Image (cartoon, rainbow, N blue to C red; front, side):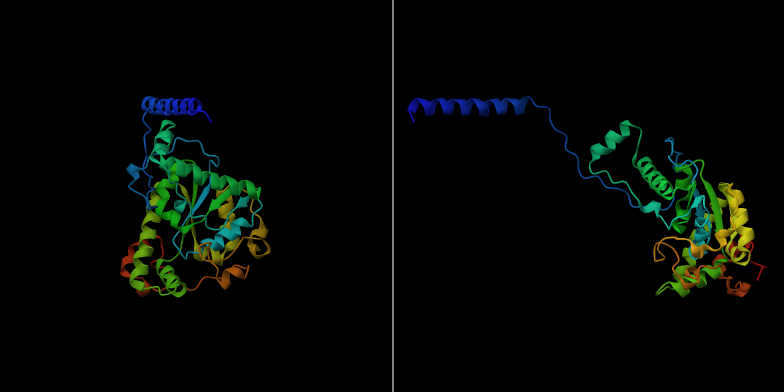
Length: 297
């Protein structure tokens, strides 16, 4: 190859390098964003800190069953799920479905649409309910996750037209049930946990319209109580609801709901006798009285 040819190639390569340097100098600076963090799921903040959502919902009026743990919510769920127009799936744990922006610019971009992380989470939750409702082919959906009681203000903000069923059980009976069911449960830890749920539920009962149902009455008179619930939901009562064992309700296992043999039996069984007044922990006496249990034993 000639010397002149090599010189021409070197000149071209030099021009290309200078052109690249010039283009880089004229290119606008690229903003870098650190990895964005999503806040941990938490219980409700104060009522004044949660603004109502302005985003239209795909499911405008879902039903939320607000209840403590071990209060018979799975039993009520499968009874409702046995109705031809009501879909009551296993626990959905919506509060643990979180939006995590991958970069801070994603927050900026969504902010231009008027959507913050909280609104995006509402949209995610709404999409899950819509997906499950469409999948079932039914008209109404009921979410019975007990921990919803801890975020009822967020649910109310996300769905201004939501409906609520408050499922109560004798607080001392809840403590007994948790101690019997949960491995390595400690009474001194269970009582404050039950009290936390009870206080949130009682606050929700004062702020939100809804229907109150008692577990003890549900097990003693399932036909009467399910008729009341159907009336509240504006659907006709169906006797086949009581024979819930004939219907498919998905898996019975931890984090999905109750998985006890009583529940798996497919028939409604009577609740245990109410605890006596002396069996009510002092911390739960006020709640037991507010729920109408003291004096019933």
